[in-house]
Length: 173
Ligand code: 4NP
Image (cartoon, rainbow, N blue to C red):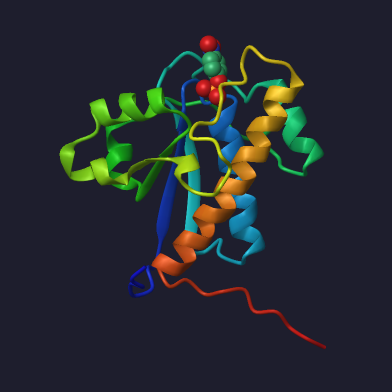
């Protein structure tokens, strides 16, 4: 992979259908990994839904509970629908499933289509989509976290390499 000059700022938008389960989880997981890598000044993360069904609502309590056990906090997030401006403003737009991807591509101007990818195109999970957990039990929400953690970690490694971001400096005493 070709390394580019260091990018000053990178913005990432996670997208699912309702923006109350999968994309808020992906937002929180990637942000936690970014902060743990000391890259909070370089990478910002947001999320949105393709639908307006849950506009203004907090994430699903089942997503919040599953996330809390792994020390991610979703409580301050509120659902919003993707805006036309998002296609211009975000550098990466990562869809949770293929229907989200199709809906995004249908609304995205041609100049920005290259920004849209499936989140699970990163990481070797063996899955291509993050399954919708809305009508499942707790195992569905745990699966979302399992897949999202692996994919976000691989995506962050990709960003660090592609944009020549600083790597974590470990201090030895
Ligand atoms: P999400 O999950 O797209 O991961 O936020 C869903 C949330 C709500 C609905 C479907 C999926 N719903 O049908 O209301």
